Length: 487
Image (cartoon, rainbow, N blue to C red; front, side):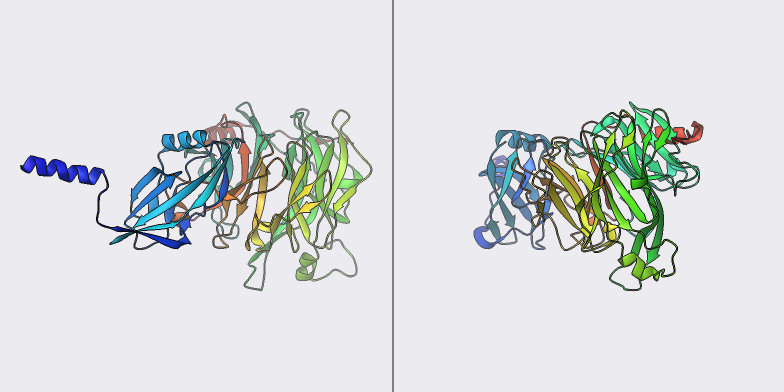
């Protein structure tokens, strides 16, 4: 009889029997991150989340009526294999998601929400800089690579491996993991070029340039880059609402041949009366998009005070042609967006149809501007989409495209105004942007406990063929390769 009782008790536990009553509540499920009513790619990792309900003892999640998760506490984690089977099964469809929360005496059934699963995959790898979000502090700074199809994460550059220097701006050549570059700053630093896993250390600078290369973009031929050389100044605001400003007092744009180690320039991109920055090639390599503003810091009899000068920095979006065969520039600069706000970080979709950029009130450092928003320019109609469904009331910037032009990733501080997180946005075949969602994490509590910002996220098609130890070895043994300017 005792054995029979134990069997019955076990069966009751397995079938989830309890005496709590079911109660339907007319309110949205209080889930974090906000994964309700989002469009997701068929290859994304599980959208694990937590329920903001202090009374929660259990959470069950149903997708199209099928139980997908049954967790104790208020955190929800999905089985990786079951999740991907679900995505495959409902690819191209919209599914209904129900969240049930078990409290002491009842089960609360919240209003359902939707997931739209699209067959347009996102590039499977994401690189970013993980940094403390405060001024110029870069202790424990890491460059990481994350597979967005699961939760595997690796460091490919670590501040301890490069002499406690600052690192930033890892960029692929057209999502190609076998050709990419990043910068290690400070004494003895330089540009780290990756070609098929072979690393070299470059000093992309000549004596007459304001600095070494800062912002850059690869030409589709794989041997040219366009870059800006910026003399960057940090300054603190007197107003508490804005703590830090970073601005240029000099900046010019150049093209470098990273095979022959030569640098090319033109007067239209190296005008001392203007500040040219944020250059990027068009997907066909025939045009260079960049931003430019009048330089208020040039010597004159009416030099404004620093605060006035900084607030006058409003950058236009411009374009100039380029011929890679002859390494020559066009002579006409087209202005695509006039100042009134300040344009930063133009990035063209791989299909050449759209250009993403950031706007802010002034300056070139949108991550510290709460008002910074994304805009999308249709390069055929020249109409601008304000991306209302994408932007928040906090900083939204540092964006990059997927290789199929259907997704872009950007850094947003929408949660608390301090910590940037990578968000993905779907752009459908008609050019319409959909509600973005944050990078999924294995632990539902990850973002509550993470005290780092995700900077400059970039999507890649394959894992990088080098590691942090390879970068360390480079700085121990490599001789820095210099460049000469072509007259």
